[in-house]
Length: 439
Image 1 (cartoon, rainbow, N blue to C red):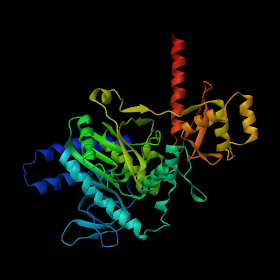
Image 2 (cartoon, rainbow, N blue to C red):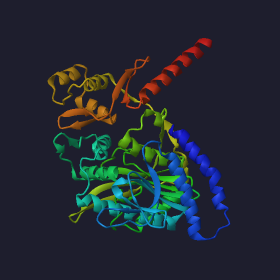
Image 3 (cartoon, rainbow, N blue to C red):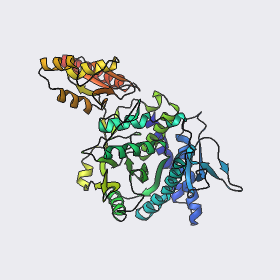
Image 4 (cartoon, rainbow, N blue to C red):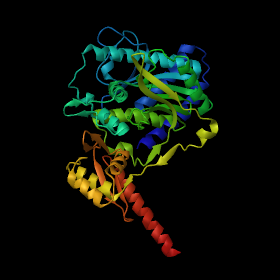
């Protein structure tokens, strides 16, 4: 369904955008209103019915008298305050799901302006969450999604029944960033037109960051989740929905892509709504294709002269390298060995898998298999993570299967994706066998 809706919105944009581009009006505020109006229309059409959500413009507030800058589009729930004699609203930041800053053209100057403008939303959020006024029993603030993302990224359990576990400084910083990402509004910069190449877009962002090295407000949580410039996008991997494992302590945090930008926008908003309301499996369709990002920025927490901060690494790539990376690839489950299959089966049955279990160690030894090799292969599946001397599932619904070929597979199957993949695989095997028979 997500592809269908994204294609529908793309069709609307393709039909309506030329009308705005060719409008005879030269009055800048009116031109801005037209593009903001089209963006609001697209957002409204993207929201599921029955959730009481709206798209408005106005300001975010924190309950302490602080206001953000004026915001073009806000996806909101609950009730806000309409400003007299205007169509603008003041909305409490806790009820803002997404904020979109709209630009007719997004090039370097507009990128800097929009980036700075959206940071005012982050400042309001920081003020609110530091005030202690937030409702700690709000079901939307369940930290399970962040804990699961962290476990997928690191192979380590960060949150258990006793609270936050002991983590290295670098990983603790990532976990706290993920928590803030979960409760903060999704921030999007939407440029209707923009850079003529992906490389130029990437270069503009790199130049902007190099001009602000050492300045406050340029850590991972300060970046918009999505920046769109015409047909290219810069995307944050905060686990909702896009996740990339840490690499030697570095968080591959931002990637570029020529993927349909409206599909990416839907991915971010629908993932948040799914966490809040539970949208159901139908919204995601078959979900058997995955975006392939072109790495742009990595962050790692560090200390310099006793001060904590973030180190930045830039991933350079020329046009040839970018064009050599596919936009998407087919999803497949994890193919595992027999030992991993047996241990995953134990976990799915609710049984313990402990690193110091004599029976398990003896069984592995009898098969000539090293414990560390099996554990590393299991952690690489991103279906489990370590907690002390235990191995734990981190999925919503882990399921396993033995294919007709005798291969073992395992995957998260809470949306039925594994079932759909197996059906396709069996159909492909049948077709192959039938073709061989005809030959």
